[in-house]
Amino acid sequence: MSDLDDVIRQVVRSLATAVTEPPALPDLSNVAAVEPADTTKAPGQQWRNAPAKGRLMALAAAVVVLVAGGVLAARLVRDDRPDVAAVGPTVVQYQRVRYELTADLSCDGASGAGSTTLTLETWQDAKGARVYQRATYPDGSLREAVLVGPPNRPEKVYSQGESRLDVPTCWGQHALLDDPMDATVPLLFAQGPSAVPSVDETTEGTLLPEIMTDSEGRAVQVRRSIVDGFLTDVDGLPPGQELPIRQTNDRYVDPSTGVLREVVWTDEAPGQYQVRESLTVLVTETREVDPAIFDTDGYQLTYDLDAELGDYATAEPAEPTTEIGGGQLWLPSPKAETAAEAGSAFGREVLGWDTALAPADQPGQEPGPTFLTISDGAGHEVPLLAFPTKDRGWALQQASGLNTSMRLGPDGDTLIDLPSTADSDHVEIHVRTAAGELLAWRATTPPGTPAVLLPAIAPQDIANMLIVTFDGEDNGLTAGGS
Amino acid sequence: MTVVDMSLGEVYARHALALTRFASGLVGPSDAPDVVSEAMASLMVSQAWSEAVNHRALMYQAVLYQAKTFRRARYRRLRREHRAALREVGGPADVDPDLASTVMAALSPQQRAVVFLTYWEDLEARSVADLLGVSEGTVRKQLGRARIRLREVLQ
Image: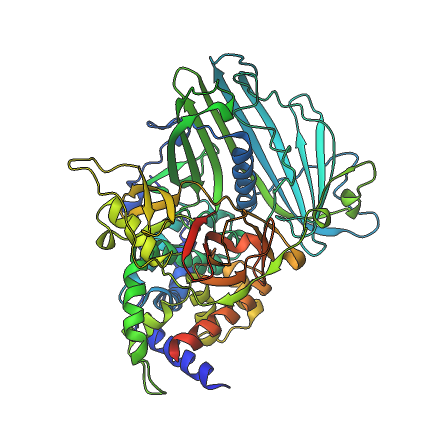
C-alpha cells in the first residue's frame, strides 16, 4: 500500500470516528404537517419560450436526465418489436415518457394551437452502445431512430418516419419549438442519475422549499429557473421589432435522491402566445428484448460523426489560472459590489489585464442586468452582460465576440469549435465538470476556423466552460463560455 | 397525514451509525447528523422508498444527495478555507477531523463518497457502484481522479 493510501485512510478514519452516535429519525409529526401541493397548477407558474434550436437541445438534455427516473412496474409490447428474444435477449434500460404540449396563440400567422400528447420511449443497450427510440403520435403513427455509439453523443443516427406533431407557429415560422424527434442527434439517453448531475448542478435556479406533487401525484421538490428576454427578428418578427418574453423551466425532482420526475417549460409572450411543454417519466425499468429492435434496415442515415469531425488541434492539460471557471462567471459579493467592479475583476483575473477599465455604475441605479464594455487601455475591449444574482454577487457573460460550440470528438472526447479571432496566439479552456472539478487545457490557436480537442473528457462530463483567447504576449483578447 | 413505512425505521436502525459516518466523510462530523436527518426526512415523503429494491443503497444515495445540496451553500467558504489549511497537513500522525474535512473539501461530493466507501468501508468498486447507483467504471474513474487530487493537495 502506498503512502498516499495510508494518508487517505487516516483522513477518512478521522472523519468516520469523529461521530459515534447517529441522529434519531426525524419527528414524523413534523413530516406529516407538510401538505403536498399540485404544482401543475401552482400559483406563479409562468410560460416560457426559447428559439427552436435552443429549446430542442434543452428538451433533449432534459430527456437525457429523465432516463434516471425511478422503477415502476409496467410493460409495453409492440407487435413488430417484441420484448421477448428469439435469438437471445439483450438487457436494456427502458423508459417511457409522456410529452404534452399546450399552445394558446394569438400572434400573427398563428397555427398549431391546442393540446397534443405523444409518447416517447427509449431502449438503451449500454453494453452494445446503442439506443432505439420511438415517438408515438396521437394518430398512432410512429417515428423511430437508432443511435449508435455513446448514447448521449452518438456516432451515427438512423431514422425513419415522419413527424405528426402540429408544431405551434407564430409569424409564419416555427418560432416556438420543434418536434422533439427533429434534432439532428436526438439526445435521449445517458447513464444513470448520478452520472447525469445536471439536475443538481442547476445552480442558477431556485429550489422551492415546499414538498409538492408532480402530475403523477409523486412527492417532488421543484427547481425553477426563470429567464426574461425579448423576441426579435430571429424569431420571425419584422426587423427592429421586439417583444418581451418570460421563460420558466421547472424541474420536479425526487426530494430524497434528486432524480428527475418531470420537467415543465412554460413560455409567455404577453398578448402573443402561451405555450406549455412537459415531459413526465412514467416508466423506468430493465428489460430483456429482442436485439432486432436495433436493426436499421429501412432506416436512413441522418447523422454521421465521422463526416463532422474536420481538422482540430489537441490541447495540453494546464493549471487553471482562474478560480472562477464556468461559462457564466460567478463573482462572490465581497469581491464585487457593483457591475463595474465585477467587470474589472473579470478583466484582471480572467483576462490577466494589468489594467481593466469599466464604466462606473450610475448613482442611484437599481441593481439589474447591465451591459458594460471593459478595456485594457491598449485597444482591447470585451463587451459583457453583468446581472445580479440572489446570493452570488454578479454573474458575467460575454455579450458578443466569442461564439463557441461543443461536439463529440474521437474516442468520445470533446471537440470545441472556436471562432477565428484576430491576433489570437493561444487559447485556455477552463472546465467545471459535472462532478464539480475545475480542469484546464491550453492549445496553440489553430489557423482558419479553429477546433480544439480536449483529451480524456467527454462532452457530457462538462458542466460549464470558460474559454479565453490570448495574443502572443499573454494579453487576453476574448473570453466566453458555454 | 403522511404514512411512513416503518421498515424505514428498521432499516435505518441497522445502518444509522454507518450512514452518519458516511455523512461525516462527505460534510464533516459537525454537520453529518443534520445531513442524515434531512436525508431520512426526505425519504419519508418520497415515493423512492416504496419503489426501491435496495433500501440500504437508497439511504446512502439520499445522504449523498443531501450532502450535495448542503455542499452548495458552503462551497465557496470551504474552498477558501481548504487552501489555507492544506499546507498544515503533515505525516502519519492522527489527523484532526476539521483538517480532514478540509482536505476532503477538495473533492467533489461524488468523489468523497467513493473515497469514503473505498477507504473506510473497504468496499470493492463493484460494491461501491451498487451502493451509489452508478457504474463500476464511474467509481474507478472518480476514485482515480480523487487520488490525483488528494495527492496534489496533500503535497
